[in-house]
Image (tube, rainbow, N blue to C red; front, side):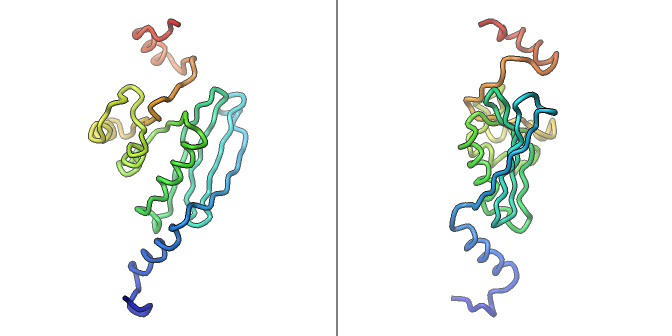
Length: 168
């Protein structure tokens, strides 16, 4: 057993973080309208963990989908599973969730939670990393993600037409 005098520096911080997160996150949820940016009925929902200061913000739309806008975990709490717990909470609240991921650490967490590229639901984690290397980010969604039926741009429309997704 190490005394308090000996347990200093990063060992002391790890111990503190370990104690801090034995219990579930203590989340505060706030809602604001996002209709002016994302369309009628859209809301920004921000989850803030009062223990770590970790934050995840999503936009939810009328069609039931939700996208991650921001995920931040303060540096001293990284690697402790805070980001994963924040994402899990959002996935419980919004089972139709996705979002753009640009770091490999965030991609691994999202992948471990079952999120995959929408056009490749059987992608391996290595496939996801290769997409990040090539494109700097990747969209990862829950496997049963059901986007709205409309198209956001000509590329999406063209792709849907080529796959005959527009037929009912």
